[in-house]
Image (tube, rainbow, N blue to C red; front, side, top):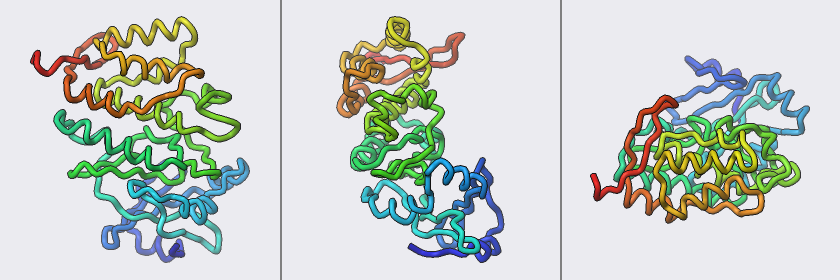
Length: 279
């Protein structure tokens, strides 16, 4: 792991892209991205028992999946940890990547493959825009390393696209203080529904019991989903007694046999399934 002096780096940096709690700088000459955290953010993390320095130094040794971009350097200012560097990847956020129906499943399955291979990692922030990058060859990389839960290294990060964090406590998604791989499967299903149908289904978590079942049935009806496997896997996401399943072949079947078409309504612009042979 390289050691990088913050003052030396800042002198070379022409501009930082600011985000809440962090600053990003891309050095195109070296194909390196520098990520620097706000001082008070780091203090807050330590107070909450999240040691980002240890996550970078030790947690990165546990990451073996090629589809994950991990730190290659650690940034210090006056001997204090302030951030890390990572290799640059020429990719576009999956949410902004051009939609090509013929290659949609390839793109989605490449994300699923990375998540499956990283069996010692949970990605609570997977769905946040920019955390999944895709290049012109449909190669996928997952970034935002400090948002990963790696083995026993925890993270305070959680995607707003998964709803409220509190609904996952004491469920199959979170045992004690650790998220389970069940959360990743739910994230992937949400991703598929968002990209293929243009529908964010995290709103379903606001309901419970029979009211939630009615909402799910309405969703399935509105989107004209008559695939039993997809319906079953969607319902499983909201049952604490049923294990989630990766979409896998179900997503392939949908992509091979259907295409989605826009249907405008008062509630927005969801898509509905149309059999390819009927088009």
